[in-house]
Figure 1: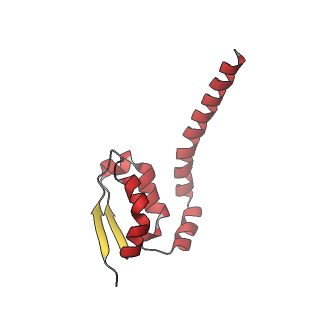
Figure 2: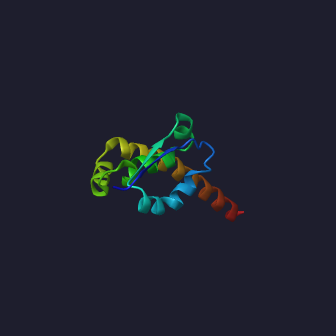
Figure 3: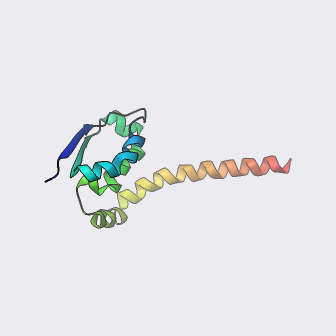
Length: 106
């Protein structure tokens, strides 16, 4: 049996999460599972990383990757959550495109 790792993830300033993503393959080779405790301040400030941990990482959840994918793809709440990220970004891109087009016309 491989050891497990237990880590607090108090990272509201987004300093640690990018490093965690980079070293995750090494962690997976050493540990059977990772247990992370994410305080509310971090969960709110780093929603995209918490989403990555909670929905896209079978290592963190200790579950079957295919099953996790099926659950994620069939979840109305997950679809709505992901659209809530995408729609504001699309609006920003559209506004920027319109501004750039207007600048080119002058």
